[in-house]
Length: 421
Image (cartoon, rainbow, N blue to C red; front, side, top):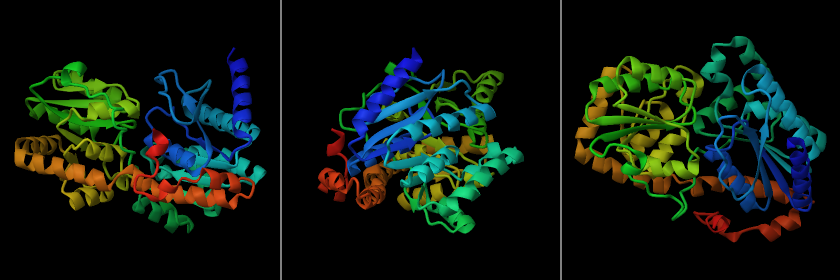
């Protein structure tokens, strides 16, 4: 049955896209909460491309909300480990091979190899978007053999990549020093929620206490060395507050064990990962947002996480660890404070001080909204829009179609608002 539907889907894509400039965007996640690839897909659409976003569907994946572009989630036999990566890359290679795309967009190193091979075979443009310093993640630093394999792929391909994008200046500088490339920097700033698209929930709707302050930690990668364990332990010293953790990651089971061992069930609550279309409704209910990544590896040290910008869009004061890219924003806009260590008692003291200083919170809320007005996804995507329009104009096959699809509003500060109605 699945095979039959797969054949129908392939035929549908062929008929829909064969007459238009067609971009396939690939990423290894399940598409539900990845705001960066969503913005990329919308930017491609505005540039004149038909877009197909390809990922994978896990057993635990929630339903995918309707999008303004085509999506396809592959169902794999394996969900983790070497066999998963091998199967995903093989399936992605075959998927890309049988389509008639005119542009490939690869997100992160774990999709780059099949994209590169197909690009070489078909002689079409490839854009590589490095969401992180992949070979510096802690999961690889403790597995040197696996890290060596990924590093070999990276060294083989990245120096000859024509179009490369990454998430901040620090990571761009790392790639520049290592491979001599100059990636385009497009930060992880989400698009503003559509007016009326967000259901304003109350704490009662979510079963959250009315009389407690809510400390929010959200993210799709709540993993080791991101300060979540210390945040939970800090709740031993904080009263009349609730730590709300929304998301998933490899440290969540350990966090639940810490909660149980320390009798913190009335102070810490877990919620599953939410589609980004719905997450904003939850973020609005918090009093402060926290991000405590540790600089224990290059990837985390230079990270600039999505949740920081989610907090700012919701007007949340931010309490953060002083990593360079995060500190730069908080210092510039005065929208939060920094912890000085990851000692749980120090974190607790910092949270209590922040929550008890209402004038400071009020000032941070106002500054967070001012920061969100400047650091908005619509403005951030302009550089990406320019790149895609440059690519489509150099493709002689589709240049006339690109001109017909060109939207003059792309030169404005909110280039795709009308496109998203």
